[in-house]
Image 1 (cartoon, rainbow, N blue to C red):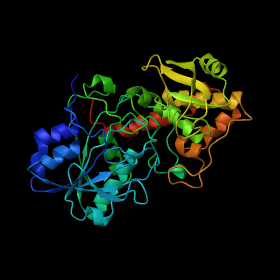
Image 2: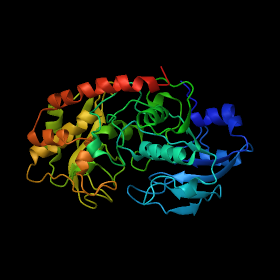
Image 3: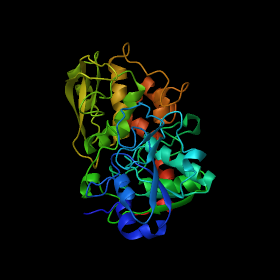
Length: 390
């Protein structure tokens, strides 16, 4: 299979509609064409329109920032020479001043298929900014790397809206970033002059390694497709005092804490017989973030059958395992988290209060799964009008 992402379709087949326009672009390291040229560089070389500015989401336009490191508010891109505006910091949406010289805003970010990821919410803010300033926005679609068929998890409850969850969608939504733009525009009544440049050759059941496209890490702690595959569940460890593997070479695959006995923990998780996954006892020493410099016991999460693997369910069970085995030492993380200073991080991540409460109560994972069954069915019906691919 060879997939043509939206940026390639735009440059080779559709760029004429931008003729003479002043263009801004939201980009990051994975904003590349199949030949690995960066979107910003290709746009800057175009003779049909003028690239006037770039916008950097979390981690920066060129991906230079670690998690929660705020990009400087304004600088010039060293390669194109155009100004770069940060959309992660005090300003998380384009201002009127940033939009003033732009006719069309292009959005070309590689999403990872998980609600808890700031890029799709940055996109919603950009759509609102375009609507407010009466500018056109064009989303250049890219694959959902963990496929567009599987949907998993409860819908976000409005009470727990945040920068990592603005819309009532499940944790694993099974949509592309372009499809989500269409859903957000309609369901949130944004009224943006929106166009999605669809991919060519992508199928809903495709994983990223079946697209023929190069994997470029969309953020520093998702270096591989393996890490993106487990991320919809292991991200829940961000809501605990245990490590989610940041500061190691296998973030979100390694989980643990100094008080965890690796074999005991791995044996417990494997005894749950979760589908498509094996927990290997592991020790690791993070170089930064939680427990930096300390040896952590825990496990590495190995996906043995990704067609059966349920990452969100597995993450819940893995957190619950720490809670059950080490009740005196397990702790939920306190605020703040992603610009939220009052809500508990685990509730922001889960998008509800019920799942953390079920973990605290020791509810079995198969019963927890039933909690979101109706939500998944409802969302599958809701998303259908916005799907662009068979």
